View: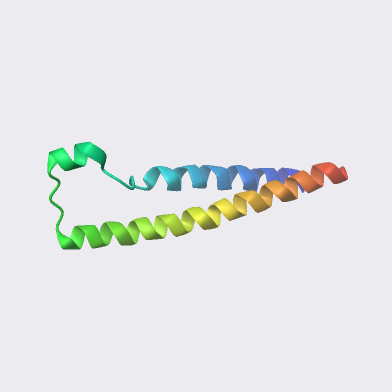
Length: 80
């Protein structure tokens, strides 16, 4: 049982890392202002929807990771 929870925790950690890496930065900073990025309305809307989905997925997978960590900690404390 402990091995199964550990494997699930490892998989959730890897998924969480991938989701965070796929997210775009919140601000372009000075380079974005100087570069003069010209986005159309549709591309900005699409990016926001994808970013919103990734942010929601980050919260869910992060919560799963925390729950699995607590379960694993309780199992170790109980001697299972």
